[in-house]
Each structure stands twice: as structure tokens, then as C-alpha cells.
Image 1: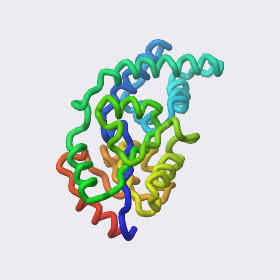
Image 2 (image 1 turned 90 degrees about the vertical axis):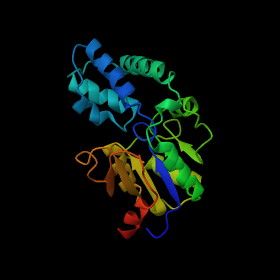
Image 3 (image 1 turned 30 degrees about the horizontal axis):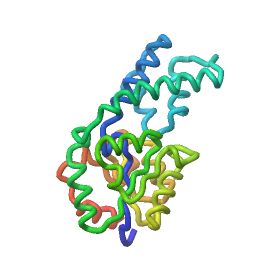
Image 4 (image 1 turned 180 degrees about the vertical axis):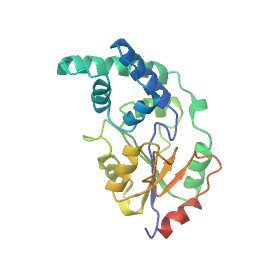
Length: 220
């Protein structure tokens, strides 16, 4: 990596903490079907599509008799519960340090984008006042494959007119880090090192983060 052109951010768990809303909805669904979903099991749902998440949840509950129509209905129900929560979001739900770091990137003329598997990304961005903030937004409505497939990040780089090799991805999910690697991009994991160990760098959050962190990536 010689020159960093663009920075791509996952949305859930990096810009805003909607992960708890997803977990609450999936856990409620699991409980309805007669089993529980632990926080540890929920880690496997991060960064992947709604239907892939549903398949994982059904596998955990050892439920294998549902038709495609029933799965569709269940996934829709989960999403309705999730949307009830995100419609209550405000600018207060932006994670600590995020806005200041984004402002630093803009001041330094970096292109910034959202690369999310979520089909609710536009709703969330609108609720937190970021609907026109990013130079590009690629979400679940624009892709055919969810992470760890690199499609979402490749498309984001394309919309930014940036070389994937010169892009940095901020991710909180193992599947997202894999997607960044598959896209040929550098990655910064936001969260726990034991989960995001494949990232080039892992940080706990974006609080007090400086662009100087990119120097460590250029050295790789």
C-alpha cells in the first residue's frame, strides 16, 4: 500500500451500535421457537446477511423442517422487530469518537464510504443525520453476496473510484475482515483481538483515534 485513497466503514458496530438490536431480535425469535441464543453464538451472525443469519440460528436450534416460505416469514418478523428499534435512533447513537475521526478524514481529503450487508443502512444513516455524509453507500440493497464475499467493499471502492489496494476497511466482524482480505484491502478491526485477529490492526473503538494509525498499515 503506497497511498491511501479511501476509507470504507462497516455500519453496524463501527459507526453505530445496532448489534444489540440485532441480537435482541434474533434472541426473541429463538426463544419463540423454543431455544436460546447466547452472545457468543450471536458473534457468528455479525456481518452476514439476514437469511444466512437465519440459517445459522436454525442450525443452533436444530430446526430443519421449515419451508422457504416459512423462513421468509420468520426473517421478515425478525426484521420488523429490529426496525422498531432503529426507528428510535438519534445522533446520540453514533459511537464515541466516530464523528471526530470522520471529520479528520474529510479535512485530510480522504474519500469515505459505508460498506454494509444491512438492508436497513439508509434508514439508520437518515436517523443519525448521516444520509448525505458519505461519498458512497453500498449496502445490502446493492449486493448479491454478503461478507466474507468481498463484493460490498469492491463496489464501494468502485463508487469512490479508488484502487482496492489503496483502501482501508474498518470492521467489527470476523466475516467483514475476511471480506476486506478477499478484496485485497488493509483492515482495522474494531473490537476484540481474539475475534478480529486476522485484521492488520485491532483497536477497541474510534475514541481519540488519529489518522497517524494509517502509517502502521503503509509499513506492512
